Length: 117
Image (cartoon, rainbow, N blue to C red; front, top):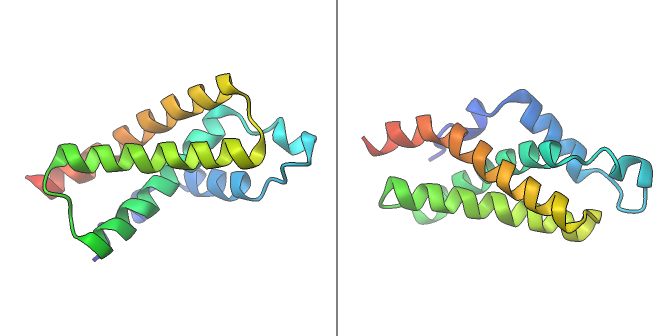
């Protein structure tokens, strides 16, 4: 049962996701465009997708706190994967992780409050 995350995702997050996923790690011109903000937007979108998949497979987490924890983990895993495959440095990685978790938390709060209240 979808929870409506992707329907509430920002259009620019979906566009950022496509841009980040499709950047070739060998293309330095495109690598320069992979800012931590762009990766964070993509991670937010990916976290929404992964959370919906998790809920469909495992059911809704037992608590709002656990749901937020999962969303942050999905977001962070996406950033790690992009850093490994697209070649960001450590500072960009940490900035992207911080921004991704912040965005995922902000975007999830409204939906999770409705789900757990």
